[in-house]
Image (tube, rainbow, N blue to C red):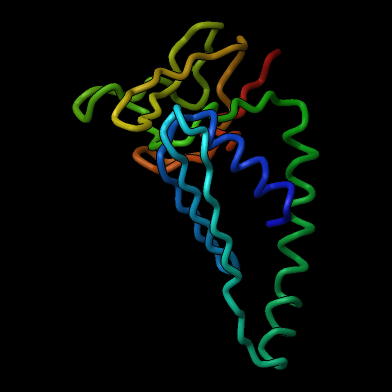
Length: 160
């Protein structure tokens, strides 16, 4: 994670109204605390987590990662004809309106603008995510009841 990503995260958290956000990856731990709206104060802690791997082990995963990268690079070329619907907020994604109801959309289903695709719960509020495009759902990229990040791809839609 570079400095620009951290700055964008700080700006997003400040706009969202969250009082505290913690993000932890393999090599970075970030805690962002915002004050009340009166103070407009933001405190950020960034901590680098040391990675200790022997040299022999570090070379082996790099060799294994190369084939995966070429496969991942080939997939976006195939998916480029599709429109990606991304998460507008951070939260928990639910594909169903309630546990006993069917999912909002299935793969192969035709959707139109304004159709509800899923619900994202953020800070105890349930936000319906509506489609901004018409087309056919090609792929669902997230599981039900899973956490999602801002701008994370959720669905692939074939607009034709």
